[in-house]
Length: 94
Image (cartoon, rainbow, N blue to C red):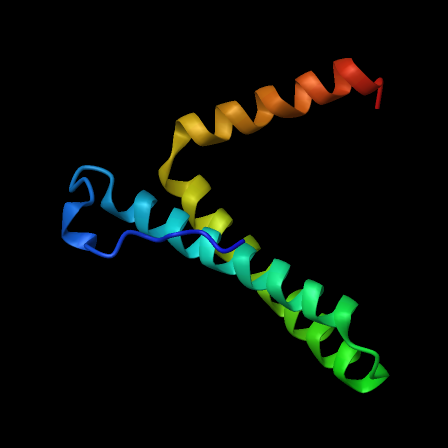
């Protein structure tokens, strides 16, 4: 299922506009990854699968680019990601 991105971007918070724009971009890229990987799984043509999976990989790079920019702007996000890593380490021992 694809997410719904706000149709009226003027309603975004001015205080955190750039962070919100980056999150919207991340959501769009994640949706694209899911779509292309699902399409690849459905196709019985090896070349089409290869193309879909290659494009999905490119979208993953875009997620990394947007996330890198978001982490530059949102210190709380950085702290919470580290907290998440610590919780997973505690839960899994890895």
